[in-house]
Length: 419
Length: 165
Image (cartoon, rainbow over all chains, first blue to last red; front, top):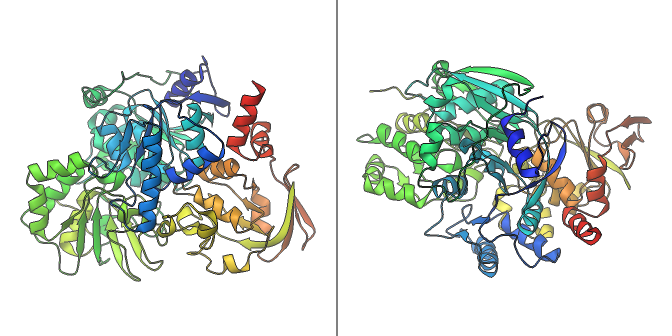
């Protein structure tokens, strides 16, 4: 019986010729990741268990991104815990203010993660790196502590759902519309415990930023991981970037999938997930009566260069609607710098938006754009749960950067129309 | 191992943002965090819960963020067990890793009512609704996971493993 791409990567890291769905394995880890919220808990567990060293200082990544620059004294203490741990263990991939970015925008950009890797991260959106052809999944702080100490983690080998992509996206759409459409179709537990494997001739039409966005939200369908095959787009992205040699795995011809879902990219429309679940999707064109107070363009889902470019294309020379606060957060310092160099930053300010240094901030209701009772926000983030961005009576509508920027100009939810 | 207590009932898709809102995640202190357990879905939970009480919920309990703070606050405020139709995978893994007993049982999660007195035997997976007299059979943990729980969590089980090598 053939193996899926995920199963091939897991088998290789477990030192086995073959694995099958449901099997419990112990796998070697290429990268273990944590952030300023989850690392302090992991550090406590690491110390409590009596470990005195990390398994490999070059295979641990700690990124301060959720509440930095520190939003308050307690957040500062958490950052300090991370900094001291990173220093004590000579962690080479430690990213502090000035060098940091939102972890899932940063690690691919810096070449820390690559094709063929087996990665765990104490952050649910660690599934992002499947876009590079890696097995990558979110875990908790205890798993992070164990991973840092031993370089190993246990997994139950997942079965998979195959998404067969055909066609090409229309210009008003991006990866975000693809993944929102899929979650709307299968539900927030539609891929629970499973892999989402993306295949088909439509794959090559998707940019790396689209793929990173699609895999990023696999967790929003309950998936263990999302993964794309490695093609010319992947190899071009990794070239000159990847710290380690990429390893290419492909699903067997006779791999077994639980089911196959066909996705025609040319039929995708600008899609919005309404409160309070990512599965509550509607076409943006059906939501013109929803007036908004705030727009956030950023996050580990949509804070990449193409997302900033979409915002620039739509906002340049225009004005944010009166009564709307538009917050733009480039995902990494390099992306922020690009925005400055290309004069997009100026265009954002001229349109009436504010631009922040990289942070997860508002996405999880941390800071930098918290909502009051009754307020509505269109956000390019990944979750619209009750209270996610602030007051329990506030509302978050998830959308693409195109839809978010067009809505910021209109003052209500609307799709982007070219020209 | 077992627990007995009163049932608090919740719907499908209870996410980790309502279990412990991110605005409180600026501390790793379990006692401090536990003061806010379930705050955005049931502001009275922390005041009403007694040691051993049981949470019963629908599908996909614990979806969303990977924050281990979620099972940790549920455990720290005295909850004896969570029964749900299904659990989100990171929550499931985290609960085992920190030693919060959780059981998947669709029938029990469907039929048991809020306020019922329920007892749970973790070794056998038998759930008894003392109020109605009905019993339910949940899938007990596989041996691999039983070992983690027996050792008191993942890190202890790793140390045990090292000792045996």
